[in-house]
Amino acid sequence: MFVHFVVFAILWMPVTLQLVTMRSFLATPSCNDRISNIEFVAEHQARSRRSCAAMCSINCGCFGFNLLVNKCRIHRSCDLVNMTSTEDGWKYYQINLPPDCQGVMESGESTSGLYVIDLFGGRVQLVTVYCDMETDNGGWTAIQRRLSGTMNFNKTWTEFKNGFGDPANAYWIGNDVIHHLTNRQPHFMYAIFKLHAPPGRTKHRKSSCNSLIKVFRLQYLFLTSGDSMINAGHTGGNVNGASFSTVDRDNDQWNSGNCAVKYKGGWWFNDCHDAFLNGPWPPEHWFEPWIPAITSVSDIAEVRMMIKPT
Image (cartoon, rainbow, N blue to C red; front, side):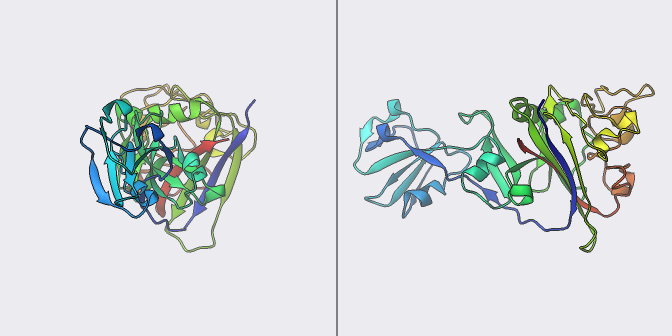
């Protein structure tokens, strides 16, 4: 049995957002002193290979740096078969993007913000995510983020499956992405509320669970008391084994209708919920996001769900 923690907290700390491109790279010596016959994405003057690496955007698969002329060239890819010409001084480096925010942290980044991750490797699917590098030792990948009702979470099955929104403001990373991240190994989950309130009223809630999501079904093992996602006194709030439901796909256990339709948002409903973080804003229409800790949501400023490997 895998055991790890789900953490609930209420915080008021502001977070500065910025999009950060990873600067982790590996040398590709087979391409050195060569020039690609495929047009490069961009060319810049650069003082070092690290400053050249910093110029890589989401379209940059590798870069070449020539110390002899302090020149940097950005490429989508560096394949030896395309390096048909020669020129002294060029050295090439493959950009490595981590698969999650824990990998971002392990690469040396320590600032919370927006990062690009390479979900499957080989740059098959690049995803921009919010990474929390301060909470509980950092390395948290935000699978959901909501700021002041800027995004409607009453979406279809396909929209939740593929993901939607803007990580800088409000987004759902996508059930396909969540499944891929969590299916390989158990994960911690951390749920955060930030409130429009003065400091001094902080609440924390911890419980234990096993791996998060397999084929859009929440696998959740209740081991401690006081957790809203699996309320021992209300079977309808127990999300252990609950399938994800949306307005157009009813997978809940409520016999009188579709919980996602009634509460206007996709979630792992049972019959129906004691924890529900995808309710509609303005908050007066959002019913009981986390019982018993939060029953009124009028002062909520941000909601965030984050995961990282155990």
